[in-house]
Image (tube, rainbow, N blue to C red):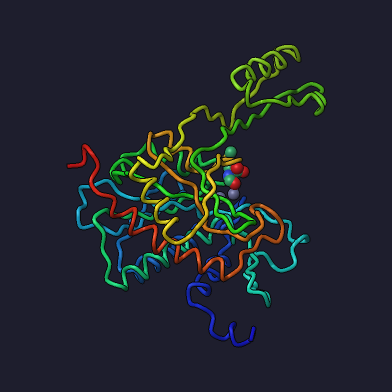
Length: 343
Ligand SMILES: CSCC[C@H](NC=O)C(=O)O
Ligand SMILES: [Zn+2]
Ligand SMILES: [Zn+2]
């Protein structure tokens, strides 16, 4: 049975495995390989691709499917192309070989975070286009570098450029997390990352001074750092590598047309959806900071959460089901009727 199945692998799975083999891994991601791959995808889809170099060697690729009413606000399908490093000695298989085991589990760095989503977007668009569909709203697929290292040379810079604003975004989808149960998790907000480098040329303080309840005391916390540094000496300084303060979250009321399109589609295909705040940080934070709605969603149910972990994998059936989910979600989102102010 297994042999038979592997002989007739779904071409979407084969493409996913091919993408997993590209070494877009930090600290030196092969972004050229990703761009070549995406150019090929655009050609296969028969859609234009645009490239915006936000910093030297850091290119954002945008594949666009123009809607029948291009003046309306667009739907963005965002994914990052980079993946986090691996400790190869802890992996059962080569993390860049995309090995599929007898159960159909595909092992690879990025199989959950978030190369699966990139290929699911592409394959859903391919199927919808092949079926002759077209929607009123334009769909942009954005492929972004450097999410895993804070987005400075990626989405953080991109959202400030005219090329971003020209996308005329109404609503964005970005990554979420797997859910071990039958339900799917969607994220409508995120925790604020603070990533601080303390320069302390003297004897460093003991790690046990770590403060426990940061969330409630967030605004006071910097005062503590300041005081600690001052106490340690005049030459002790600190820098923020990340200091996110924005608390915008995306509306998930049924009265919101974008959320309604998303949630009613999930209901129609019997998906159970759990709404949560993302426990870490994704590029959605920069999109939300621009005042735009973004939902973090990676359609992986019945799957342990293995992002950044050893032996990250995704089952091929779960992956394929995710494409079908987007095949339903994208028409609904790209057909949201004109909103007030759009006509
Ligand atoms: C704060 S920058 C790091 C971003 C990274 N994002 C997802 O995994 C994370 O580790 O949360
Ligand atoms: Zn990610
Ligand atoms: Zn990640």
